[in-house]
Image (cartoon, rainbow, N blue to C red; front, side, top):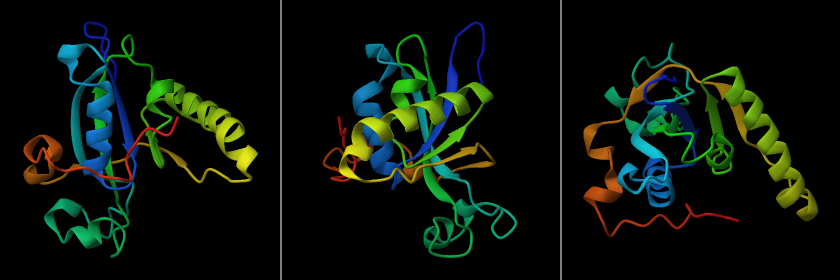
Length: 163
């Protein structure tokens, strides 16, 4: 979503657990008072089979995130200012990308190919990132929102900048 008045865009990424993903993005690209680009973050579930589970947040989280039948990804949805941080830069840090426009899809495809060539092909590895159109979004329960702010000692060792 983009508006002329604010010039914000929406991006949705899955990077494993949503607590770590939100923390990583906030740490390096937010808050907006520092003009690093991210204006808001919301953690939730997307990309699953909504016919099997209409709202994964209303049920057992294990089922919501793939161990059960819903196959939703824990994800973070962000509103960002593309003049402060580009979608190109944000899209480097993800395991699934849920695009909100044809432009975002093109950028995600291009950046994934660039990262593959620069960082993975020399190591004889293959990126397995999924790039899909953003689908239905379900906010996670309130206690999940801004978890690292509410729990300042929380650190997720799996979520870090790689280059």
